[in-house]
Length: 120
Image (cartoon, rainbow, N blue to C red; front, side, top):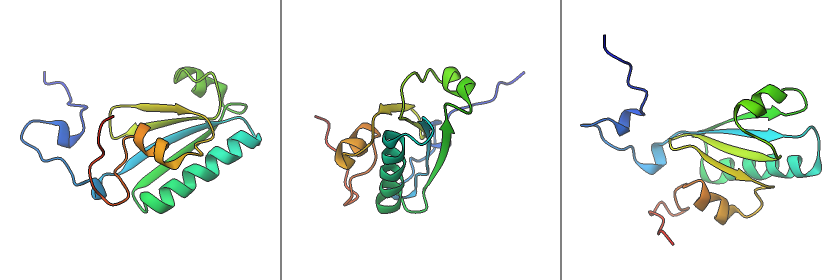
């Protein structure tokens, strides 16, 4: 019996890596109701997607007050917490997401000019 390959198509041998401007990003933002920090994180994430990932991202918002089991399943103990689910590997960042440059670096997003990021 053959097992299913759960890796992304471009991670399989013999396939090409998509251009940075064609990669689709999937995020999950854990918030705590209408807390100020949660509202700031959501606004900052929307701004990042609008300005740098237009049409190439999806955002799943999870309110830990309404769905605590989802937070526990993902190991979330503080809010706001952002997960980058795709492309792999998973990335996690906690906070209001206010520093766009740092956020882009932590989430390994392409630079605004389309060039590759330098490792520091």
